[in-house]
Image 1 (cartoon, rainbow, N blue to C red):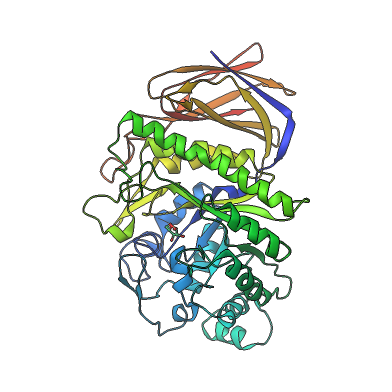
Image 2 (image 1 turned 90 degrees about the vertical axis):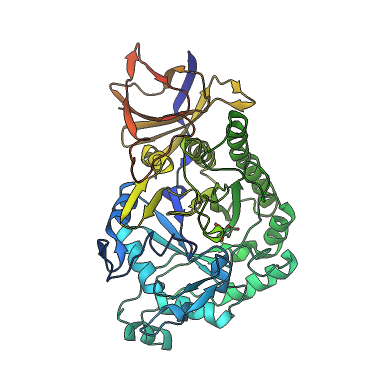
Length: 482
Ligand code: AHR
């Protein structure tokens, strides 16, 4: 029996709902075909936005959606994507396909309205001008009389939108301009100067952070830009191999499986190391950390466009999602947002589509199991854990909200069943219910078999005040206690 102790009074902080955010780029079939099919499509839609996909994302309470990239963001010129005559361009980063700009600012902000989520826009610092970035914010948020507000009205939107989250560039050390940190900091300071707060709209400015372990980038950013930003981002992808040989999304042995979980867990140390650098320049923690891209990155599915980054999603991805979300929850006092890459049809998606068909991935179901943590108080816990193939077997998050305690817990072992006995300090449990996602590590959902991996009820007993349940191998569970 693995002992778990949850201390209801050991409040760590509030779990920002944006930790459950998503990322959508003009990449492959994420936007076109995935989220957006156009008004004239035979696929049921509302103003071009797929009804099935929108409903599924609403159901997991998507809190924030990042757009239009990624690398695409620093080649995106927003004026090409408004009005009646839209310019066509080549999507140089992703497959060299024609981008017809039929999904632009109005469509993205309508998508967010339909989803009931906050928009997070990544501005173009790499190849765009200061004026262009400044005018985009004016176009979206200015309610008075101005050239951009008039243009917006001509395009059918009278009232400004609200926009909080704004990224000043993306991966500017790489696809966003190959800049040195010393150069980016000056560019950041200049561009953000003209990102104005109009009326009562308040921007939350996110500076481009490091690619994984470049701590000197973080150091330079904090040294020169901390007073000008609300958050610094990092990107981290779980790649179980080398970039040119990442491995299959569905065919892997147990060594590769455990290596994937171990690599996913590394994000904890990476976040902590960035936070330690940030702390040296920001003692009062005014700058948050945003993990604005994370997830698994495998070889593309055979027969698909290599530039489209389409991959299947198995129980292995579900375990990666669970351990990653636990890591973000535990750091909720500093991590204000985390966006999984990417929402639909790209990398570690929660949804896959093919024509009119849609399937929910194992990762989607983890977001369903974890959604109670949004805006809840994260509380401390201790698990009697052991290592399986060098990886901690169990991982968990506990939170409380409105008289309920939610525990999410995963068992990464491929072979061992684990009986868990949970003692809750500081609260008594009158009732408890459980749900679980479990299957073989390779198991995944297809369009023909969409329920191969699905949430089931998990029996939970209360014995002498303790909560007892059994976790199957390779499983993620949610226990709700009242
Ligand atoms: O998510 C795919 C790509 O990964 C993004 O465009 C880029 O920001 C990152 O390198």
